[in-house]
Length: 321
Ligand code: SF4
Image (cartoon, rainbow, N blue to C red):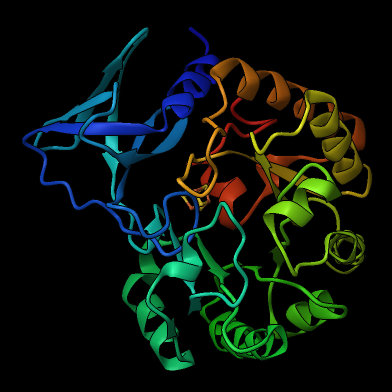
């Protein structure tokens, strides 16, 4: 079976139960799918990695030996690989959430319910110092505590402080006009501003209080500031959009020079009736995105930071398929 097909099948389950004698240290994240949950593990083969949420009732089973070699099995799945340890959130990156907590309440996101904490510049630089020799990227994300403006100021202070490590810095925060240039001036090399939903109507339903078209305008501005292959945007697959609507969103992103991060929905009690997308849905839209990226001359393998470099949660168009 081709890697892309296999990864799509595994992502469609999204969870795993752990067995074997490996001393697992499940990462508990304050960002990304499964934020605030019981933890996740990274399973990798020579083709790429997958992040799976731990669930004792999962249909997938991960059996790992003391040396980290592992076998992932389940319905129509049997693959050998190894466990990857995550330092801060994901392997080979310090991916740090600056403000844990959020004044907004997007329906698919667990961050607003987390205990609130704002990391200081000293706290973040101290964390990076401990792992600097083992990472390829510094990736910074944030909820919004206080106001969007205050949060951006804090993020810029951190970018300014960590740029001196000489490691590529990527930033994903909620943007306002001028954010791209201010982040660039502080030392960021890539940004990810999330459009989140395929349509504006879905956005208004899922993300009350946030600005859909405003984010599109800032994405265009970001490409002028950071250049092509340096701007990314998450769009969640499975929030009720039609296939045609998702195609149109991906086309619009690539047309303005933005690389889409197509993120399969992690089901949540806040979203009754919305299941995890099927492997066929994930594979079909990722192949469409691959062709749109090619037409636009965009190359996700150039990513230096954040989710497109990691690839744990998504089927990466142009790399996995
Ligand atoms: S793909 Fe993104 S959210 Fe998922 S583990 Fe990697 S860096 Fe985190």
